[in-house]
Length: 490
Ligand code: NA7
Image (cartoon, rainbow, N blue to C red; front, side, top):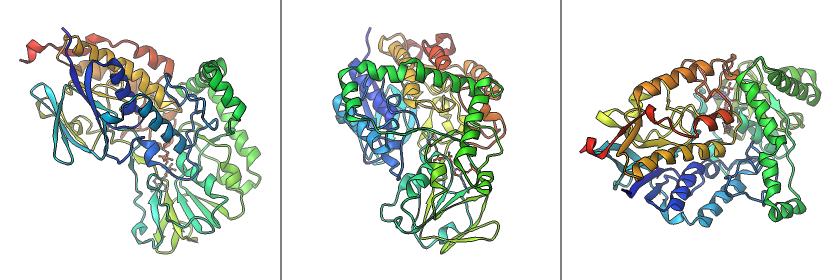
């Protein structure tokens, strides 16, 4: 017996678009995508700051089934990635299924199905809920004394203020994650004075950004195999495997190699000894998410660019004062201070069986069985949910692996073999124990602060490489799921 199920997808970023087009291709479900923003693209719609690019090579940060011969550069600029997703939505004809400006406020499991309430008050119903609401989404606005008193424009990197004075202005950038490093690299040739407030210095992996020539793009168009060779060929795959070996075993020769590369980058790129020592981190490479940049060290050695390491004392109406009493007069202040990383689908209220909410289950930190399923939340599946692979992988690869896994669970519903499915509490706990124990051995746990760590300081990440993730996700262990039949529900 085939049942036509209805699926609600929350979020029209990379993962939500993936789910939608895959369901459209199957043709055996009804589905709808709710997106709270006024346009699709998720991260690539919200982030528009100068210098934005993806630090995963463009041909690897692409849906596997929709290669793009037209990428302009080895590392694609953010707006080009946004345009790629727009083009995909049209190519797969899923725009009519995407409802913009529709923020989902609450999802509740009632009478064997999901009741979904949207901000405008309308209520929808579905058999299955797919949370594709992103990982790094809610800006972290730092609690720095006096921040609210700054007289010039002050804004978060994910809410870029196009009206703010940058060219020939005095600009401050707080934060030196991937975002702050990209912004500083881009603004170093535009601002009159640029101050990078960097609480904790970062290790920088040098990369060579370059544009693809027209001949190269022509080659990609004529022969998709050339794109595959870049993405799946030995060279790039070997880089990934070496990186995974390093991250999962900090004592490995692969980690020693990374440490040597980033140390050498610092030694050879930064000429002034005092600046070099200021920029030298006191923790292991890749403990924080490794920064990929071929430009940052050059940028901070430009005239008019200054790096302040350490804590900020206070923001004052005309600038920023550091702990040593030094005052930097500024026209514009950019907060590249990262995101609230424990939110996932929240603040949307998700209520599972017996009134249990995600806030209840995630009271310590967000977690999910293989980053996909949570006990007592039947037919609720996440893409890029908590504790998934987050190292310097392509999250598109991760979402595709997760989707083919989720589809196998959907098949049980569509084929009428189940009415609802959720991981059992036992399997969830066993998985979480294994994952956390393994994660303690990764480089992320070697003594630095980062957005990977949970409230206990344990990396809230998949603790192995991508091939292991792919293998583990190839087929669900159905014995780990509570699979209820229609009869049991009625
Ligand atoms: P990240 O990587 O979380 O970096 C945030 C930065 O902001 C980091 O340097 C923080 O310093 C700094 N920060 C946060 N709060 C403060 C306060 N209160 N004072 C000073 N500095 C502060 O975010 P990104 O946006 O750069 O990158 C996020 C991800 O996007 C990245 O990993 C890629 O996946 C893409 P800290 O290191 O905590 O001392």
